[in-house]
Image (cartoon, rainbow, N blue to C red):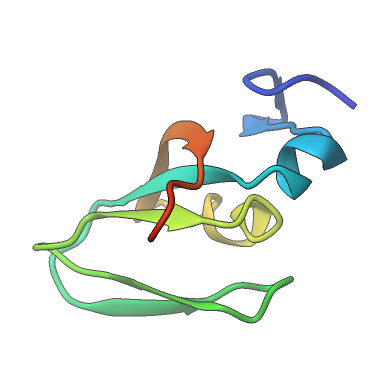
Length: 83
């Protein structure tokens, strides 16, 4: 498996340790209407809208969300306290 920031098929690859340490994908929504997306692995519901375009996404859910052209990866970073 690759290191944080490398890609496999256009999607980032992360180590299990990075996932366990709380790394999150910052995903940007390209649309305007409110949309709710359920994570295929965690079952978490992510809410995006024109006013709230960027959401932190569990990297295990990324492969199910990012292929949708309404979304794009803006970055990878740690989960911040209180988020």
